Each structure stands twice: as C-alpha cells, then as structure tokens.
Image (cartoon, rainbow, N blue to C red; front, side, top):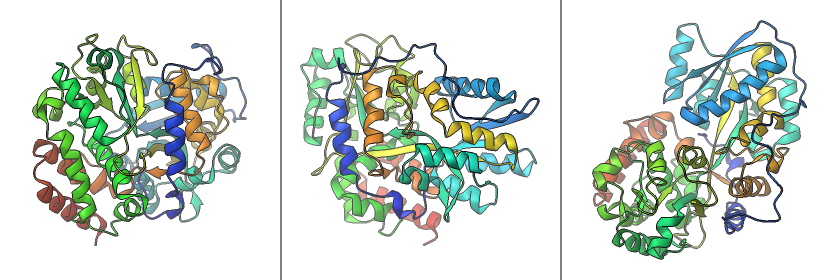
Length: 452
C-alpha cells in the first residue's frame, strides 16, 4: 500500500466519501439488496488455469487469525483446480525485511502479498519482483480500474495484482451501548467528541484504541489530516514535499489530542490503549452486552472479520458509520494488499491470474471482512448488506480515492514496528500534549527515511 510518487492514484476523494456515506446510511439492511450467496458455496470455474500437478508453491503474507484462514480457502480452491500444493508462509512486519532474509537464504516464496506500495517498489528496486504474465494482465484489464492497476505498477511495468482493498475510514459501534447512552452516530468531529463524552459519562468508555499496533494510529491521523488539511496537502505530506513540522500537521495532531487526551474516553485509559492490539480492540467492543469495554472502534471494513470472533452480528449488534468530517468533507482513506510473483515460475503466474479473477475474490468475500477492487465480483457474494454496500461504494468510486499515507512512505518511516511514524504516534498517544515534540520526531524520522 505504499507508493513513491505515482500521482495517478492520488485523485479526488470526494466521490468515494459521498458513496461511502450513502452506502452506510442504512446500516441495518436493505430489503432491495440481492440475497447473499450460500455460506458454504465455492466459486464456479471461470478463469482458465494451467495444470500444475506436483508443483509446490509458497505464498507469504502478514495475515493472521481468521484473515489467514479465509485466504487459505482461496488457496485450497487453486489447488483443486490446478493440482498444485500451496503452503501459506506467515510473514512479519516489515515484510520487506522478512522477504529479504528469505531471498538471501535462497528460499523466497513464489508469491507475496504486500501490505504497502512501498514494499512493492522495494521489491522491484531489489530485482525480486517478476512482471505479471499475459494471462494475469488480461484479468487485470478486464476486471480492474486504471487506478488500482497503476498501484500495482512501477515505472510503467505491471508487477502486482491488488487482491484485497480496504476502506479505512469507518467507525464500528456497539448498537446496544449507543442505545443505552442515547447516542446517535455522529457526522462531524465535534459531534464525535460530544458523543464520546456522553458515552463515557454513561459508564462505557467511548473508544477502543489499538495503540499497541502503531499502524492503527497512523490511520487515525490520516483521516483527520485528509479531512482537515485537504487532498492537496495530503498528497504533499505523503511524498514529504512539505515537512511534518508544517502547521497543518500541528492542527491535525491537536485535533486528535481532543480524543487521545481524554483518558476516560479510552478503553483501559491511556495505558490500556497502549497495551491493546488490533484484534482485541475489536472483540472487546462487541462483548459484554450493553456494557462492553468500549462503545466503538475505528478501522476498516476488515473489522468484520474480528467481529465474527464474537457473538455480535454485523448489521444488528455491530453497526458502522463513516469517519466524521473534521473539515468541510468527510475523509475516505483506502488501502490494500498487492500480490507479486517473486519467482519466474508458471505456478506463480497462475496464482496471480487466479487472484486477479472474480473467482478467487468471491470465495473470500463470502467469509466476510474482505472487500475486492475487482469489478467483476458479484455483490451477492458478500455476506451482509453492510459489507455489500461498502464493496459497491468502492467499485462505484472508480479511481476517485486517496491511498493510505503511511503505506506510501518508505518502510523505515511508515511501516516498521517500534520505529518511525508508528513509534512517534504511540509516544503521542502516551502524551498527547506534546504536539511540537511529536512533530519534530516525525520530521527527523521522515527526513532520514526519504533521504531529504
């Protein structure tokens, strides 16, 4: 999801914001929607794949838990169709370092799913990545918009297939907790803070913050910054064309401190937030009936996977609203995972072809917590109206989106645990009053990583 200067992908975000808002207004369901496909169904054969009897492939990704389990079902279908044997290899962040170690040891995986555009650029610069073959390219040309194709290209050559997308501008909430406190979904940041105050006063902390995972904190910042500073500044900061000491960053951090600076707003207080990893941030929001650990949790559409580990039902107990507008318009930040071949093998290219097809995406779509940028995916594959509408909004927006800012940065700054932006924002969560110190640290780390 990181990128170095592919300006073509940084287009308007207004259309997706509007589409997202429209898609989420009827959170409880829509009688006019298509029925979802049976849960146990598998994709019917469509894309042509070669026979790979006896071939063994490895696929690396940073996915864990139910996300990994659901992707494994896609790999099983590929095995069934081709005769190959595919092994999932769990990777660690930063994935570039993980892959570098594998490649140095002479054992690279055949395909890797990279969670940052910057990781794809690094893989190409290091001469690890293989260009996509004609069959995969044909699927991309048929099924993907120009914006999503360009995100998988480096220097005009197509290297990657965006298998998974994400709307990272959503706030999921516990319907019972909101009802008990008499709170309605807010549309502006001011309304969000007021709702947080009411919720916390009612005895349920407002927000579950996954502070132990620095990437979630970058998403908080990016949504505020995009809405408050606007798309032009967002693009400039993403490329480090303006400094992190800029006044626009000060304003965004000051706004974020209105939430992070209220210990009573946070599940477990500041120390609890800093110790909470992403999966727990979700599950503790949707357990405990009308007295959960928190009333709401911020993150993308993939939150639905973790909600599935609780007794809460998406669309009933777990509802969602778009990230509130801080400035004139509500933000929408997207992300995604790009599949790239690391070996010049027939099997690797066949798997890219499969991942670029609607056949593969529909298998994982049925499991929930997954959105595909593939235009050919049947909306009925999504298991409920919320996820179906999120997917429809993504497709309807075409190329009108802004990509995750930290995922555009060099991995040393935007994608490394305990370093760069992740660490600086964790320190900011611990001490939200230190806006100037946070800015100085961010700028020092960014200048070093970008080399300017």
